[in-house]
Image (tube, rainbow, N blue to C red):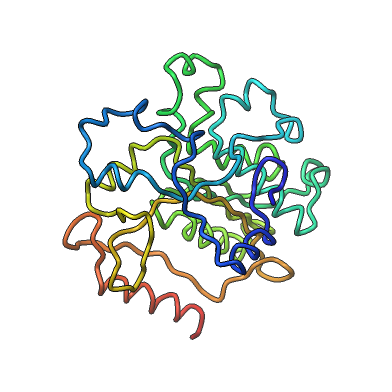
Length: 281
């Protein structure tokens, strides 16, 4: 249940929800083998337990490079996250009625806003791969958004956003405001995250952030951390018409708190009030 090479369809998501399916699994062999990646002897038992589970996008290695006019060599050097963004971005525009010929013919007054964190791709590659002429753009975060605009012919504002786990929401926020302010006729907000190496998971486990059983139990007395998961998605944002519209949104920072990663309750309350005020709710 994927568009060629890439994205989960709405039907697949509905099927999983209907069957009470669980998208969290053990780490697929295609991602990594812990023993071949790090010194297992240096890990704590908690780290070993936390790194066993996650949510993973199936067949993320597949990509129809010919459809997007990308050579096999360049596609091989591209971070799979960039490939997924191309697939889902085109799928969203196609579903909205945009055709590739129309976009490339100058119909691309569309902004692109991508939520993406520091990619794992460079860490997953052997040193020899860095000699490729495509290596510089293959895992560059700014290129992730630029490639979508380039390949699909869109000339609106374009940027990659990295605000950690808020990246997708911030991309939607800025995409919506760009369309609303008339900076573009529409915006595409995209986000992607793949876990290609275990290093980030091990670090989060060391900080006590992760669940040892790989399950999130939000607002539950049994809560013991979260599970790291992958995902990819895209929305067409319009001020009016058949795209997605927002009643109101806001972006703020916690400022000073107990630590760099700790929440600030009063700051988050201010954020919620600002978003509700803008939505007149």
